[in-house]
Amino acid sequence: MAKILTGIQSTGTPHLGNILGAIIPAVEMANSSNEESYLFIANMHSLTQIKDQNILKENTFLTAATWLAFGLDSKKSCFFRQSDVPEVTELAWYLSCFFPYQRLKLAHSFKDKSDNLKDVNSGLFSYPMLMSADILMYDADIVPVGKDQLQHLEMTRDVASRFNNLMGDTFVVPEAKVQDDTKYIIGTDGEKMSKSKSNIIDIFLDDKKLRKQIMKIQTQSLSVEESKNPDQCNVFKLYKVIASEDQVKKLHLQYTAGGIGYGEAKELLFHEILNRFSINRQNFLELTNDRDRVEELLLEGAIKARKQAQNVLKRVRSRVGY
Image (cartoon, rainbow, N blue to C red):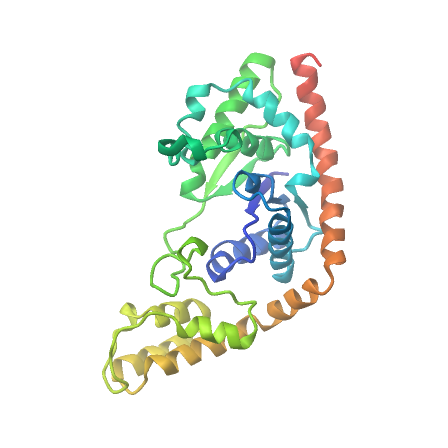
């Protein structure tokens, strides 16, 4: 049975783009697959940037609550916090001793910031080795990654092969499953939805705040009566990935015929988001009111993850002579 591993960034409440592009596909895969799945919240990686314990804790909780709100079955998958498996840091050290310094200098996470080294901590520099440990710790066969993360997977394969060649067959060398990230979800400004661009839609906001967020979607200056090109409209593009095929066809006709304004189209998008995600919004609200339940599920996952991690670490320690 193949093992699939997915790391989840703990950056707070996932936005609509995260949900449609990553969470829903991953949950469906994990819940329906006969493969063994490991899904972890990468809250140790967050420490390279976030130094506030309250923010770090809250981001981790909100990330976990979102995945659970979208139906992740924690009994079918091993769902846990990275920080609950301390073995991963020991493995990261061993891997660091088998990987060239010059190769780490080429990592995008470091190279993109190397022009201003005073802002680069050594954790960011060694980031790829912790990520490699995240993967190799669980004997993962398949790792779904976006094209922007492919380099990290290549480094993982590289360090695993180096260790195996020098110390004997120890690690499973994982394969990348490159996800199609060309069909990204646009934000309120028409660019790719991103928290760094402040253009997100947070479906878990209360109705009033969510509606206000949607009303900020940038549109052209056309009157209600004028014909509109759906393919050039940010509201329509978002509606298209939320609504049913029949609803999309109907709105398409209204746009081309004229007689519908952008305000009305935004109202349609708002109500469709409420309709499609009503159960998930309710689940999320219940989880935020029962934090102990989320904690319990994460700790249950950590027990399973640590059992696997300790087996791999025992194998590695034996190989290096400890």
